Length: 142
Image (cartoon, rainbow, N blue to C red; front, top):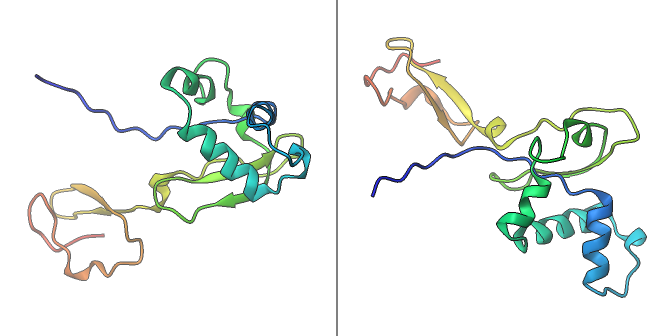
């Protein structure tokens, strides 16, 4: 069997209306309007984890009807405490920064000056003086 594996960074958009509907289906005692930004992020992450593949399709940016405009606005809160996920609450009615922080931003790109091979490491604060190029073993890295 010859499987093809494609690793790609995916952006999921959970609109306020979708989160409200999910919250109401859970029959929660607390009104949706009283949720903090942190609770909204947790709710979206729970929704992500409990959605089927077909349900997730409606949340994927540039897939179906999710557009770039839904990721632009004023960032109200964000959680970047984990390496593999970045979560933001944005107000699309206010102008601000674009939602562009991705997992790949937390990687350090290193390029070999000898063979031009590029590779990435997770620790952006690592001392690279002891590293060798995985391609040619050169220590001339930038």
